[in-house]
Image 1 (cartoon, rainbow, N blue to C red):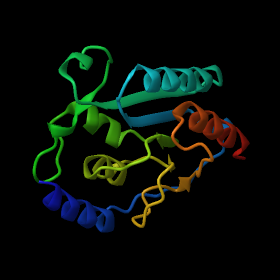
Image 2 (image 1 turned 120 degrees about the vertical axis):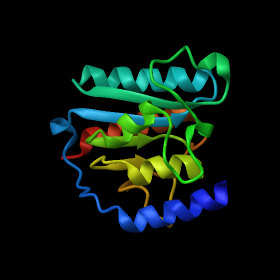
Image 3 (image 1 turned 60 degrees about the vertical axis):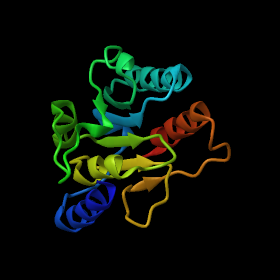
Length: 167
């Protein structure tokens, strides 16, 4: 499936023409976070980051990809990697709603982009996609490099500081 999905992603990347233009952080209202749920430590760091954004008056939507069945009930909107069809359409309404939402910033805090996550990033209607992964496919309008890249909390704090500086 990943070979077919990779080809579909390349096709959609060329076909989708979405006007992507970032606005200042102070004017932004909606922020989306797309990530893979791994453990409680990562989730705690993301929750702290979301709290900071909410204190600034931002509406934040989380969409974690889960792999364990028991994690499914813990979060309001989740999806499983196998919720995608062979031809790149999503069976999960949470993903479809997330894709069509026009976020001012779509943040991807993970260090690797799977073909499934790439599909969501390509199809997203977000104005500015932010990530930590340099890609030849131009998945992100803003890419941050981190000194301490494996520390999610450090990366998110650095990202928050950069976002606040956007004018």
